[in-house]
Amino acid sequence: MTGPRWLVTGGLGFIGSNFIRYMLDRYPNSSITNLDALTYAANPDNLQQLENDPRYRFIHADLTDAAAVDRELSLGYDAVIHFAAESHVDRSIADPGSFVQANVVGTHHLLEAVRKYKVPRMIHISTDEVYGTLEPDDPAFSEQSPLAPNSPYSASKASSDLLARAAYHTYGLPVIITRCSNNYGPYQYPEKFIPTIITRALADQPIPIYGDGLNVRDWLHVEDHCAAVDLVLHAGVPGEVYNVGGGNERTNLEVVHAILTALGKPESLISFVKDRPGHDRRYAINAAKLQHELGWQQQIPFDEGIKRTVEWYVRHEQWWKAIQTRQHGHEGQS
Image 1 (cartoon, rainbow, N blue to C red):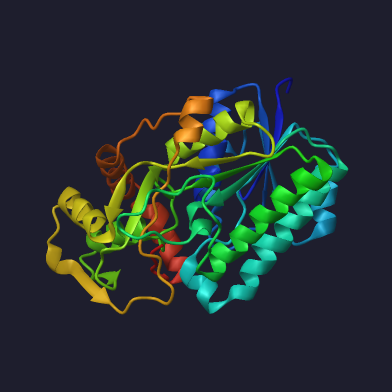
Image 2: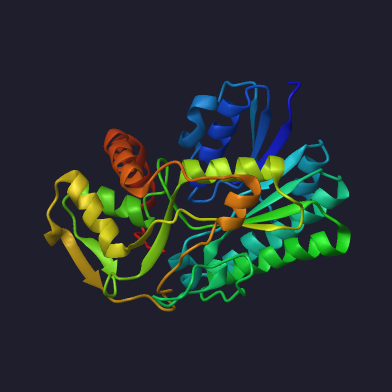
């Protein structure tokens, strides 16, 4: 391959696998190595169509294994795009230590290897959850908003962000941080909020909603997120943070209603359950910096995106049922 060589971490997960497909479609002369630890949320079926593609290479390795990370980075890459992370809030409440290992220690090992082998660019994928929560009338989070994480998951991500920031300021590491709002779309692990609603509604099972269902999230279609990361990879400024938001604030109840309407299912399936500890009330992202400085624009409005997502899960029942059979389901919301 004569084009760029990229290393993607966590490429068998939801966003990472969408990103790999997006980039190989957009840059046919590129090649991508996917380093993934094959945790519960990784699914080889997500990239099954690339198994015989000479541009794609898979490496089974864990970022907590410093030697394995060093060995892979020594091969030389034009950029590292770091998606790998434990990301489920409920799981972080039950087992915070595994999140510290994966998200903090793993990111540290990656940053050290990027520095050692002088990789020209690294994109560190983070989350809006590092900013904490907003009141109903608060302005959306900007890149200048203070970090105020409220769950073990978001605290581990904020910690990894600070390691990336320190690597830039201390060593001149060419790292850029992106912080995105809640993603949705095809290939999302069934325990996440939107797939949980869809799959349970299809089975006419109760749909659990935390608290009063009025927690607000800013929803971003995964393809729009992939386009943003591509743009930051090619045009972003090292040391900077770029927020990626959909501008689609919806309460959890509004999302459930939209999905039930799309599926023609009754609202009687909704079941309110006890709220979880530290449940952030509202997230909203101000993506003006990304829009004005790099020219990114959202392409998929929420109403269109949610219909496409519902249709995908209806068509790919075999994909998500296979996961549910293996995992015996942990439903969740963010």
